[in-house]
Image (cartoon, rainbow, N blue to C red; front, side, top):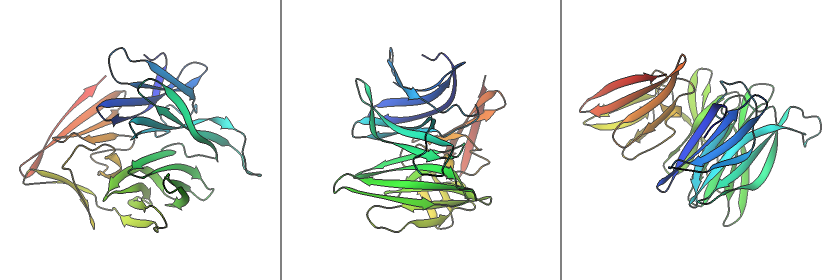
Length: 284
């Protein structure tokens, strides 16, 4: 299925099917590919991708939308639209349907994107949000675009200036972007319509287990893990989900995949009564 080195990957369930997209490096090319994770699946070629450092993560993201998989990714270097800008790269959408893939939406030309977590994408009922992280010269800033199809509405919000983006999550029916700011986590809520951006202090994040109920908490924040959830790495303590890890709640346990030298470490946490039972394995 792959013929080169996979350096970045994202996945999302669309109803009962799992869509996977990844950036694959060969000797002379770097490309974006995707597949439905099922037997004898066809691999879709989605275009050229950025040939960044092999350790770069977060330059492709997948989300479910209207029965299809929406893939947002960073492409190769392109000409800059704005005068005086340089080092611009394309960002583009593909839609992965049941029988094929197609380019959709308008491509972006983005100057000086961040190396890690340059892309973000959250789909909610009635609207979706996508973001790009750039180096403004005084630190990173993520611009989040909000698209509401009916009635047609769009907005752009630069948020978390000087902060390194960590990822997104959904809380209280809203999209949140999480970043690390001077060693502390912060969240920015991106609403619909003319709602102002709201900020949340996420210092001292902790994973709690009380009476067999799992939750992630911080001051003024509580997310009870009462249903399967993905993309939890942005709001977990670094001791549990280190940088570049991926974390999901299956409904019964927390799974965290992270790098351990040349191996992949898979840790499993189960909330049992008032404590967490932990087990892990290193996969070569």
